[in-house]
Image 1: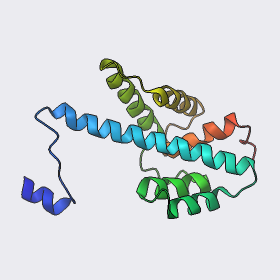
Image 2: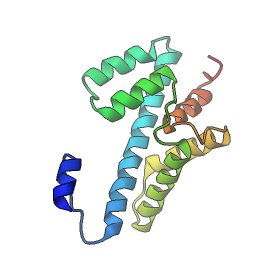
Image 3: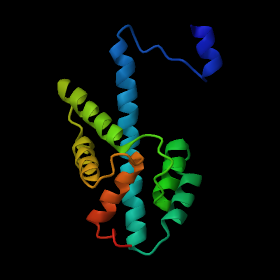
Image 4: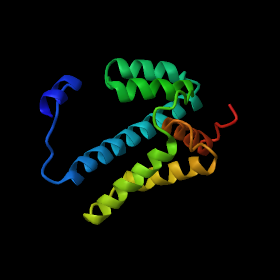
Length: 150
């Protein structure tokens, strides 16, 4: 299969003999994306509260410090408060945060941000955002900051 994988992607990694390790890489990758999304949600909410254009903030930061698809793509969606098209549903993001927490707990590793993320995603689901893109968790941060009326 390796020749086929070489044509389809940039690189293939072997993460070990246990298939569960490949799942763990995916779960932890999604956990890191969720952490990045929340960081951008908080930064753009502060910018908005201070009357700084969140789009300008994201443009400045993603041109230098935070280049790459997670910050540039999701950052633009967050700054514009545009949660479509849906690439990854918020409910799936919540599930992956729970999977990361469960895995970490089983290895006695605390995930300090994980509990915060779980609560934010749970609140977003409670507000009917399950089917929006997972960057819509930004609205939870905005609601908590009293900016949901803007």
